[in-house]
Every structure is written in C-alpha cells, then in structure tokens.
Length: 59
Image 1 (cartoon, rainbow, N blue to C red):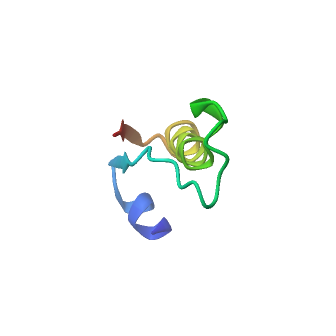
Image 2: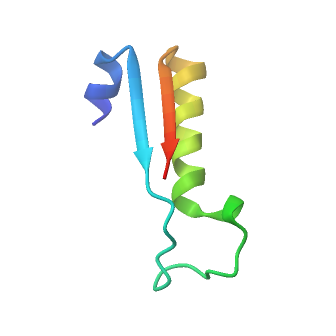
C-alpha cells in the first residue's frame, strides 16, 4: 500500500462511518471514532509530507 501511495499523485479514501459496537463504545462522540481519526492522520501526512492530493469521503 505504501508503494501505491508513493507512486500516486492523487489518493482517495472512501471510509465507512458505521460504528462496530463489538469494538467501540457507541456512546462516544463521532469525532473520537478510531477509523476516522487514523484516516485523517494518514491524509494529513500524505498532503503535508509527500505533497499528495488527498480526497476523503465518509459515508
């Protein structure tokens, strides 16, 4: 996956937002969702450090 990121100028993440109740407390605010935060951190690193154009879609 890292090699694909390095070779691409534009990267699009399509991320589901459904909470898996078996792995996370559904009473937590959406902003604390682990999956969403990890993808945002990866996107920020790709944009700032590697100058990639990153699109995020949450559904």
